[in-house]
Amino acid sequence: MKKECVLVSGGAGYIGSHTAVELIEAGYDVVIADNLSNSDFGAVEGVRKITGVEVPFVEVDCCDREALKTKLFEQYEFQSVIHFAAFKAVGESVQKPLEYYRNNLTSLMNILDLMREFGRQNIVFSSSCTVYGEPDKQPVTELTPRKPATSPYGNTKTMCEDILRDTVRATPALKGIALRYFNPIGAHPTALIGELPRGVPQNLVPFVTQTAAGIRECLSVFGNDYPTPDGSNIRDYIDVVDLARAHVVAITRMIEGKNKQPYEVFNVGTGNGVSVLELVRRFEEANGLKLNYKIADRREGDIIAIWADPTLANEELGWQAKRNLDDTLRSAWAWEKHVRGIE
Ligand code: NAD
Ligand code: WQD
Image 1 (cartoon, rainbow, N blue to C red):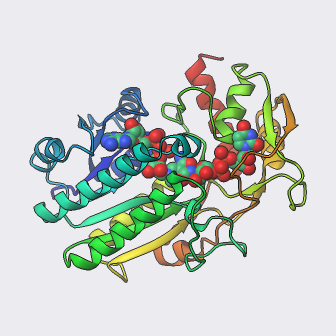
Image 2: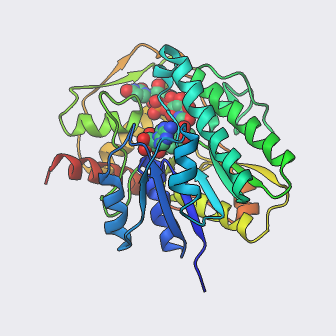
């Protein structure tokens, strides 16, 4: 039987590359499309090495509708798309709002437009827990109200969810799932793919691993005077391979016609809130090393705490986070060592 093909836009990126691996291992054909604006070809090579499959790679900007059409939609017979391609740096989005609105909205709209034109059916969209803002109640369910985001980046996620919902509503043949990721961390167990931030990392775990590798002198813990048990922020850190598996399950649900609504939303998190200080301690223990860190001022725009209620994904998708935090933190360190050539 011919395999189902899935287009993975942004597939050279952190989450996209892990998802490409899981899709292939679940029996799908994959086409990766990326403009390499925040990634490099090495991730595609990593996917090929892990899977032993010569995954096709198309270098294309999803904002270029004509190129998307001729290089992808006219060439490959995918029925399904997982759309990761977007800019994702929260701080940068405050400085460059137009770049963020243009890239994140246009790329999704082009993909949806071409899916309609070519009669392609299923799409998973990368959303984020950022759409909940600072929630009034923990943990957050999918029914927790969305709040105006604190950054243009966050706003693009809310807007894109609405664009997807409305387009699905207007297109009988189209089905969509928005996955709201919490904080993805870690790397593939082979250490052949992982997160590769450019410049100074803004996210916690890459800063932690770069500090452990001696590239950064000291980790700043942004605030220990929050109203939480140890005073530092609380997040729901989700292993990237677990997150990748959620995409496979979501796309399969639509391909098999098992979705209950044409447009659905799921939280993808562990359900466990972990503080920054706790994460640092767990990283040290799991990897048997000491991390140089200090308490610093709060970072502007940080919310106090957020973690997921993943019950809907557990029950409806039959998905749950499996990897424990220590294994995930070991995988993050193994990847950093691989990148830096540390024994
Ligand atoms: P990433 O930057 O590693 O991956 C995104 C990929 O998309 C990159 O390879 C980039 O080159 C590509 N890209 C960007 N604009 C493009 C365009 N116009 N055309 C083609 N390719 C383009 O980021 P990631 O962490 O893998 O995130 C993937 C998705 O998940 C993004 O939509 C992001 O907003 C979302 N998300 C990420 C997180 C997180 O913390 N990493 C959390 C929630 C949601
Ligand atoms: C985690 C915690 C920091 C760096 C971001 C986006 C969100 C989503 C996930 C995309 C916070 C603390 C961090 C450091 C620190 N992305 N920290 N020192 O801010 O929860 O979420 O990524 O959709 O939209 O906002 O993730 O990794 O930046 O921070 O103390 O050097 O670590 O204050 O409490 P965040 P993060």
